[in-house]
Amino acid sequence: MRDVSFQSNNWEDKFGQEYTNRNKMSLRDLEKLYKKNYGMKRTELNKLFLGKFDNSKKILEVGSNIGNQLLCLQEMGFKNLYGIEPQEYAVQLSKKSTKNINIIRGDVFDIPFKDKFFNIVFTSGVLIHIHPQKIRKAIREIYRCSNKYI
Image (cartoon, rainbow, N blue to C red; front, side, top):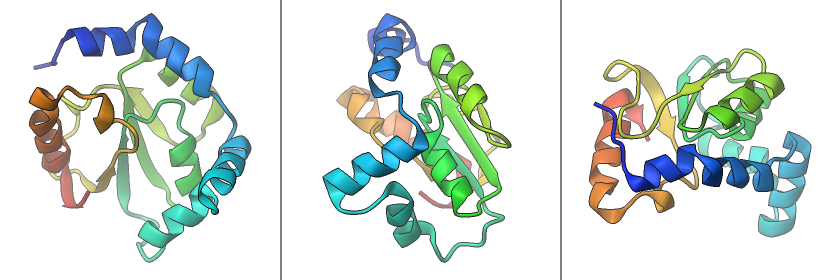
């Protein structure tokens, strides 16, 4: 059952679209931003965490927005990439900028995949937007979809 709250309604509406527009950038620009802010590109950071994994692993990003982090993983050679995003506007933008990445509308409270479907489930910058009373529900759903790594 989908979790509908003031917070999720805001994210799916004008607030979420404005967030996407403020943060919309190409993969190249994202890499530059990470290099400037953290001393390494996002792809380099991903290699530290995921570099030893087989590229055939099924990976889900929860809250993929326009798909740039999944594009980083694709650049590393990963092929089975999925994303869920509650904001339809961001999903449509992601479909224009990605190829062979399955990004669909969905949210962290009701991930539309079977139990243990993914080898790896990750999120970045999403959990901070979840009300503390609902964080456990989100974590349980992420855990449910992963067969090993979070």
